[in-house]
Every structure is written in structure tokens, then in C-alpha cells.
Length: 517
Image (cartoon, rainbow, N blue to C red; front, side, top):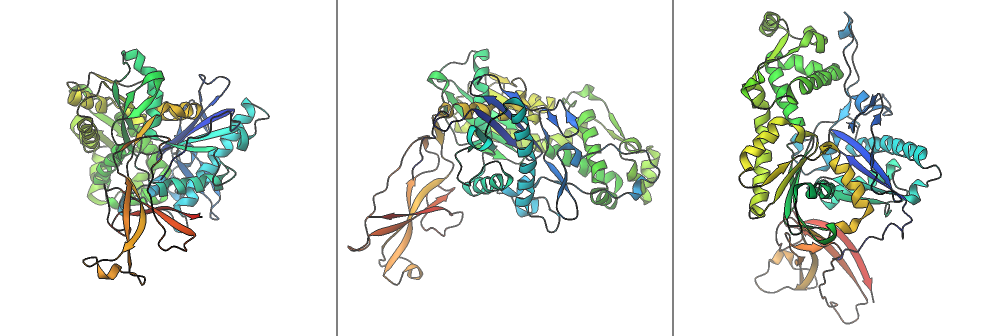
């Protein structure tokens, strides 16, 4: 297996780099011109929304699967003060479709409307994003040729395998972000890697020097991704440990709140909200985030916060019945959230993040000079407090850089401007070839071919190996018979350190090639 150095910007006639953070719950983009690489503009004007660095990763369709709304307008709306508001059934938006790309249990992937494939949803969203990017570029630099002069750098979770990246590239092509499937004008970079590049400028603020290592904890809405990097000469970065991540972002706190709400109003009422009035439900979640989630710091002085369901989600009253209705009327339709209740929303999520950090520190043998927390969920006061309490004695510097929500997308632009910033990466998978040798006694009889051979996995490079980004790995092979003039090579990968056969569990076919003499 070989990887090759990407042509530099001048060779590809790149004039502008666009970083794209296509996230599970929120998405955004940033851009910079090669003539002024230090000036990075993060887009802040979205449909029906201004002054925000990201918009919701959500869509609404009509009955023919045409997109009618995207971003924030597709997801949440303030309830209208109408007595018959329950009569109007809202169109349920499609969201969290990016989770279908990840390797998570099928039961944890969000259901999609019948007839809608997750690839179409991703393509449709990227198409809307692509239109906005193109319109923005036209106003900044008229005459710019999008397919020729613009390099797109899309960030992906640390856990994504090649299959997920290929699917994302296919969707980007169908959405009009690139003009050919194999276009060199689209690059991928892991989200924590992009965040690490963004944080290079912060290192001097904390007096970090060459050979110091630092941990990036990228806390997004859906996923949390981590990487440990070492600062080298000329602001280059090498990777010390394998990138890791899990599905424990800020949206999982929202899910805990909704579980609690369901206990107060009943599962039937919650189901009706989700099916018929999803926009009001999401508006309720936004109120929870503004009043409770962003303010909670874990201190006893937090007190009790109230959410007025009559004001925030008036349609709910139509569906709550029986004892639960009596109880809610006694409470005047107010949901009261005290310290311990809110802490219970956070703790299952925070504990997962702490475990991820613990594992990275152990892998790095606790040789970490600083930890930087980025991403939207990193601004949680309670999360930051818990991380500081747990690791303050082991990590000298634990900090949140400015504009942490934009760290990944701005880092993507910086990576596109200078891909040589990344010197090494630690492989997350083992790579090898499917080869054949003579079957011998003791080998599984069911694997013996008609020609008396057996096919097996030959490892070329092991998971966990730190490799330069332009490294090459070689494996000598010989023809099976003297007259052979061409040979097919099948490359396989596995998350394990080695494998025996190419149909082992977790083994994946990476690609094929034919060499002709």
C-alpha cells in the first residue's frame, strides 16, 4: 500500500480553500484566499438566521422528496398563539442522517421516513450547502471557477473508515461540490486533526515549545473525537496515539432531558409531539438549551429552572391525559428542573467523555503538556469543570481556545492551505494483501482451491504504526506460474493487529488493482 503527497496549491491552480464541517447536528463552512491565507472568514449568514457560525443539519421535504427547507428553518419554530394550533400537522424534518455513515448499532441509528435513503438526505443537504458556498464565493471573488480554483476540505469523525469516506465523496459529487468522483479538489481530514491545526496558534499563548505534546478533545453535537499531537519544527505536527471517538456529544444531553419529559407527560403524548409537531418539540429543546444546558455549571447555587410548557409548547396540552394531565395542571404546566435532575442529564454523557480522555492519557503514558477542548459542547461549564477536576493534576494546561465552535472548520482551511503541516499519522487499521500459497496438511480443507492453493491475509503494516503522510510500504510477490503476465492484487484492512484470512470478522475489502508485465 502506498500513499502519495498531494500536489501543492500552485500545481492545482488553487486560489481559494473552503473548509466544510458537515456535522451530525450542526454544519458550517469557512473560506480563505491563498493571497491572504491568514484571513479566514467563517460563514455566519444562513436561511432565516444571521450571526451564527453554524446552522442545523436538518431538511424538510415535500411529498415528492423535494427539499422545501434546510438548516434552522427546517427544524424548530416558535409556536403560534392559536387556539386551534393542534389542528395543523407539521411536516417532520429529517435530521441526524449523518449517523448512518458511522459504525454504530443499527438500533441507535435514527429512523428515516419510508422511501428516503440516508445517502439522498446527505446529498440533498450538501447540495444546499454547495449552492450557498458558490453564491458566497461569487460575491467575494467574481470570476472564480469553482471546480478549478477552489479546494474543498471536508472534516470527518475520527472513527470513519474508507467506506464511509467513499460514500461521503459520492454524495459530494452528486451534490455538485466536485465535478468528478476522483477530483483532487476534495480532501478529507479527521475532525480532531483539523482542530489540532487550529490550536497551533494557541500553543504560543501557553508557552508550549517544540516536542511538547497536546491533546485535542473535539466535543461536537453528535460525536466526541480525540487526538494527541506533538509540535515539531516549523509548526509541523506528528501524531502520538491513535485517534479515538464515540457518540457522546452535546445532543445526548438533550436526549436525556426528553426522556425525563416523557416521564412527566407520558409516552403517548411524546409520540404525538414527535410525529405531528416536531418543530414545537425542537423549539422546546432549544429553550432547554438556553435556559438550562448552557447555564448549568454543577454548583449548588444553580437553583431550580422552570420551563413553561404552555408558552413554549402549547400544543402539548392536547395530548396529555389521565393522572399525568392532573399532575401537570397542578404544576400549572411548568417543568421544574433542579440541580440533581439536570446533573442526571449530563453525567452519563460526561462520564463517557472522561473515559475517552483517560484512555488517551494512558496511551500517551500521561506525557501531555496541554489539553484543548473545542466544539460546541466544549462550552458547557459543567463539562469543563468535570474535566478540570479529573485531570488538573495530570495535565498542566486545560483550556478552551477562542471560538471553539469554529475550531474544526477553520482548521480545515488551514490544512488545505498547507497540508505539509501534518507530518505523521498513526494508523487506525491494519493493511495487507490477499495472497495464495500451496495448501499443506493441517490447513483447513474447506479453503483448498481447485488448483491446490489456499488464500490468506498477508499483513503489510500494522494498526498503531506511526507513518509519514507520504510513506510507502512494499511486499514482494511472485507469479503463481512461469507464463503469468498479469496479477490481481486485493487489499484488505482490519481493525485488529493482524488477520489470518480475508473473510475473518471485521475484515474489509479496501480496493483492487491489476499489474501487467
